[in-house]
Amino acid sequence: MTRSKTDPRVLRTRKLIMDSFIQLSEKKEFKDITIKDITTEAMINRATFYYHFEDIYDLLEKSLSEVLLIKLDGDDYQAKIVDEETITSLLLAITTFQQSLSNRCHRGYEDTIARIIREQLEVIFYKLLSNQHPSQEKQGLEVMAAILSWGIYGASVEWSRNSEKITPEAFIHSAIPYIISGLNGKQA
Amino acid sequence: MTRSKTDPRVLRTRKLIMDSFIQLSEKKEFKDITIKDITTEAMINRATFYYHFEDIYDLLEKSLSEVLLIKLDGDDYQAKIVDEETITSLLLAITTFQQSLSNRCHRGYEDTIARIIREQLEVIFYKLLSNQHPSQEKQGLEVMAAILSWGIYGASVEWSRNSEKITPEAFIHSAIPYIISGLNGKQA
DNA sequence: AGATATGTGTTGTATAAGCAACGAATCAAC
DNA sequence: GTTGATTCGTTGCTTATACAACACATATCT
Image (cartoon, rainbow over all chains, first blue to last red; front, side, top):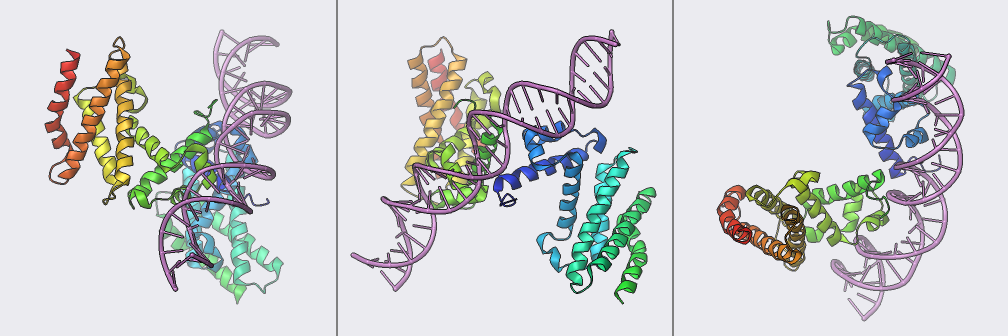
């Protein structure tokens, strides 16, 4: 934790691993991806994987976090607030991410993946809300972040049920009012 | 030298450096490229550069060697023989390489670059000839490799004189007979 | 059941890569 | 010519990665 976050070797290796993971998950489903697959694809030693990640779920969590933050225009996400645009891009990000992860159905794993996705959403929403309302009390922001994350995730699940029938953008647009309304009510 | 030739870290770093060098030489001319530029572009430490290469000329030499071998279809170049096809691909490789290196004129450096290119050609020709004629005496092969390398390099210089007036392929085709004739005479 | 194989985490050790600092060389500007 | 700023090539030390080996788990096959 000293300055390992800026060490070029760390950045390179993490990127290699995450990219390989994303690439692999476009070819096969999550439950069939092994650590060996990832390290072979990334051309790094298996022990090095465990130097950076707890296990494959930890990798999933951090990769997802990475993807979501990138979708929020990278480092200047502090300037972002929770509005229709932000929610849309987040929802779009997780639907495409879920699509690439779960090519087929795989019960039992879905629960874990769902939890990770929702938890990451909650973390991001809390960050955004904290920047947006610095004076607000912590507990209130946490509640709102929880509600938003569950709501958005639920929306993504609902969308994937009638997948292909409607574009993500159109669905998001129709779902936004329900989410925003609660948001505005709380803010007012 | 123990097993550093298969160590993934070595392969990665060398590739990073060489790719950055090639990329930089497409933007600015050789004499303006500093070690700092390369290491910055490759996002590696400057000390690491000197771990792999003597200096920038050593890098040029090894990059060129790499390019030429790749043009000969990589590792199975042992199956290759010195024929029109091989000579064509080699000549094509060094003309494009020279073009990317010397966007502008820079006397004084050209001599060193010329020597490096020709020496690398000689090494490659000698390897090819050794595989092609295993029974032949060493000295004869060395002479032929020298003649071929000087000839090919001369052809590339001649081509660059009336650059743009004729495509490399067409020029090569017209120059091949002069080179092949000497080759066949020696073989017969 | 037992054998074979493959994946998971972990550990000890060798080595490559990062980093900061140094004196020397090159170059620019004044 | 003197100063200041880069770049060069090198060094000592720290840290990340490679590699081999390990015990354990989970399949798959006979």
